[in-house]
Image (cartoon, rainbow, N blue to C red):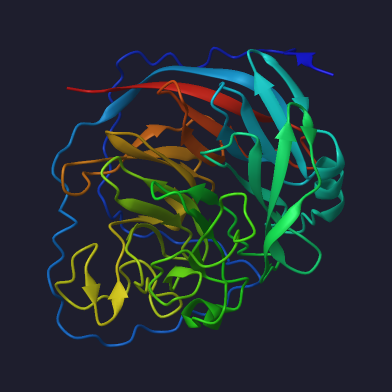
Length: 403
């Protein structure tokens, strides 16, 4: 049964041509509250040799800032939405993490997917801590085929399902055994421009997993996903001949590509610095031996690979970010901040990035920012709790780049 939108529709911000103050690429870290129970004191950085230059990243170049022209809540009254996938006809599919449901939204009406697959998801999803029904991606060559990342009772897995309108068929598990925990379950999945499925996993609170190339945890994985019996296998050309694309990650929450093929990932730091990384196959992004630029050898620039570790292209104090899902357009990377309760914009230049600045800061915790088929941005909030009920929103945001 479809439902027509009810309740207040907030026309929101209408900050027409409002220029927002820019922030430096690396704010001075500020004190953080106590880390999650899965955290323990950070190991000191290992000494590294002198840095070598990295041609793919530039220092902040003064690229243009951007402003919100309009922000509109298109659906409210949700409880912890987590990810969005857009079908070619404009239908929006939204995962609801704790209930294990998938919401279908189009033209002001919404319902929830039903059928054997929907029943399986609700029964399988274990939302303890940071787990639940997390990432979703639509097969580019067949919009009726979905892939979702789900936290179950014993592990995280990626499953494939067929969708026929509102009906979701029984699932096929294509990858299982991704370590799960109350913290650091990763969960974002995206198809890359090469047609393969990229899967972000967390370290499940066990730090050595991130440096262990035999573990699926603390990695970005790259697998075949073409609705065939090969789904879930290592994609051709992976750097180690396994599913691992990059490693040394703590908890990647955002994946995206620029139109020229650069791959970026947002990553939650521990208690000092959060990260935006430029992802290269086979590179080691340092965790748990490195966090952001902390302990980098003198003279190390953002984005450089030094002593076997690749450093982030941008960092934030954890109080200003806790970055989650990202959206990338031709002119910028947009990053949702949970603890920071804002949307960051990182301008894109021809050969790197410019200075990050705050785009929007009055929606509370932001789980996701993503670019939609119409060129607008869409955000999911993450403000619901048992105390305040279902208060989360899907928000459409129209942005202009300032001169």
